[in-house]
Length: 94
Image 1: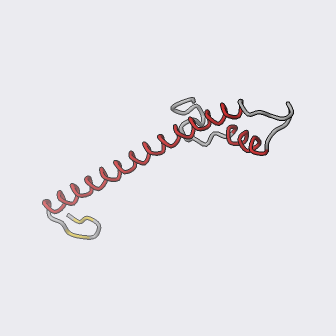
Image 2: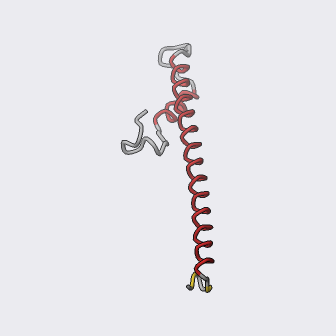
């Protein structure tokens, strides 16, 4: 049997397929681990944003309408949602 331009016996072809299946499983495991890590970072980011919102609500202002410069950046950060899990009604709505 010809595979990738090389003649292989049935035994060699079976070994080649087994090797490819092992490599595929390794890549799938790596991808799943990457997805888990991204989910952990996403959750951590969401929790930190909540802490920032709480801190923002407790900041003393010298005047009622006064806004610190960092508050503008915080408002932009909280307004954007960059998580792939939440766009278009994704897996979670958090």
